[in-house]
Length: 96
Image 1 (spheres, rainbow, N blue to C red):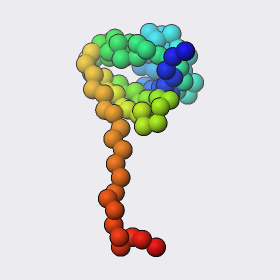
Image 2 (image 1 turned 135 degrees about the vertical axis):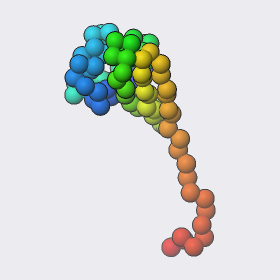
Image 3 (image 1 turned 45 degrees about the vertical axis):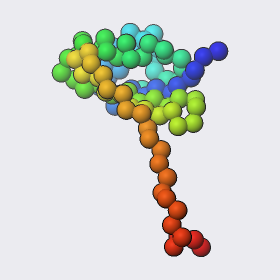
Image 4 (image 1 turned 180 degrees about the vertical axis):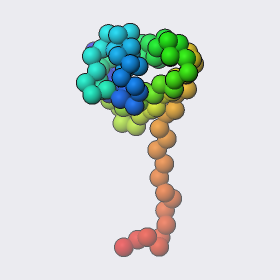
C-alpha cells in the first residue's frame, strides 16, 4: 500500500516537464500522474538546479480529503503551500 497523490506539472515548459519525468521515473500524461511519488520534492529541487532562473510549479491533490497543495521551486529551493479550507460564520439573515 501507499499514499496516492495526483501530481500536476503541466504549468511548466515542455523541457522542464521532460526533465521531471526523467528524474522521477514517472510518465506524465498531459502533465499529470496519479501515483506514489515519495521523492517529488527532492526530484523537483534537482530539476530546478538544472533550470536555476525558471520558477517550477507542481500541484498535488492527495487521496485524503483536503490534502491539496501547490509547490514552487527556484534554484534548488522550495516553498510548499497547503490548502486552507474555511467556512463562513453563521449569519441568521441568510436563512431561507
